[in-house]
Amino acid sequence: MTLEKILQSQGFGSRKYCRALILDHRVSIHGKPCTDPNASFETTGLVFSLEDRNWTYRDKLYLALHKPAGYECSHQPQHHPSVFSLLPQPFIRRGLQCVGRLDQDTTGLLLLSDDGNFIHRYTSPRKNIPKTYHVTTVHPVDDGLISRLKNGVTLRDENIVTRALHCQANTHRQVTLVIAEGKYHQVKRMIAAAGNRVENLHRAAIGGFSLDVSLPVGHWRFLDETDLASLDTPGTM
Ligand code: URA
Image (cartoon, rainbow, N blue to C red; front, side, top):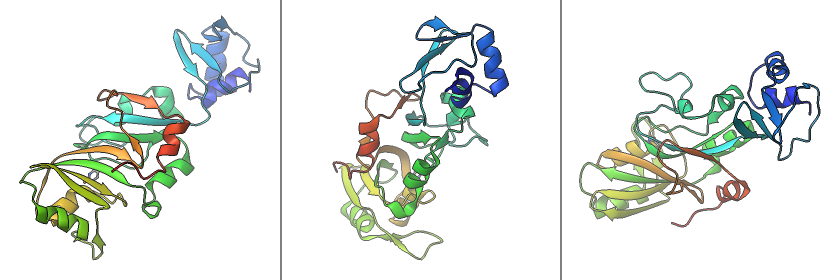
């Protein structure tokens, strides 16, 4: 692929703008300046730098973000900053989207991608991908709460019973809840329907992929092949 097309595909701007960046001596390949916009490179594993920052060519983006509280999962946030403000601008320009949404006050694992098929696959309620949440409740947790969540509750404005795939008490005010569907405000609505309220909500895992404890709040990382494969496994709960 030509260098100007490579830069354009990676979100650095229009073809004309990328051409100008190259002619302006601002791009290097494998550490050597390249000023020919039509120079052709094999893209697999290609590392290029724009000014002093290195980038690896990626056909598609797959990211995990440790979402902080107080951020909205929208490109046009209403009341809080956007999660996209935590990610590099070129990723946003190439069409990065959230894979499902977390509420502004929910923390934890948020996947992002620019691969439409991937986004569809992991947001479709029919795929039954388990999502694991740690829920801190306002009122103490008792056996009744756990069994109501396991047996199924009827959410407000819905006639169908929604069940936890798994639910266990961790402390007297915290449960781990695994759900399959991913409906709007599902965890908060399930906990309310079961007679309690959510104080804090944290998503710990999607399928068998858990948020790394070493990924600080507000930071992100790329998903590798093993991470992507683990999304389709049931997890360890
Ligand atoms: N369920 C909720 O109620 N909120 C979230 O952010 C995620 C799941």
